[in-house]
Image (spheres, helix red, strand yellow):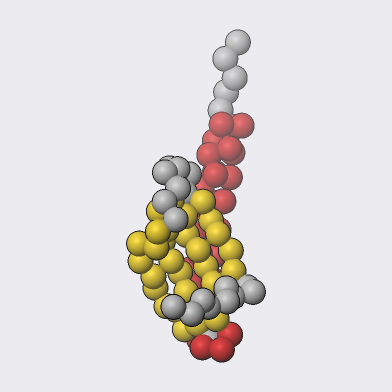
Length: 87
């Protein structure tokens, strides 16, 4: 079986639950695809191919979620900072 060269652009994200779980993201310029693959114990459990045209929508969704998380955290800090101090 012929070996394929790994894409030059990609990243591995480790799952905080451990057990060698990870998400691998690879960019395939020749196909104009981003491949998201789920790995466990060095075995690929599944893949999803995202066309390059859809990447901006995914980024926008992740950005909105991150903005909402920051806003919620800021509100919690403001509530704690504004609460009367015991003492």
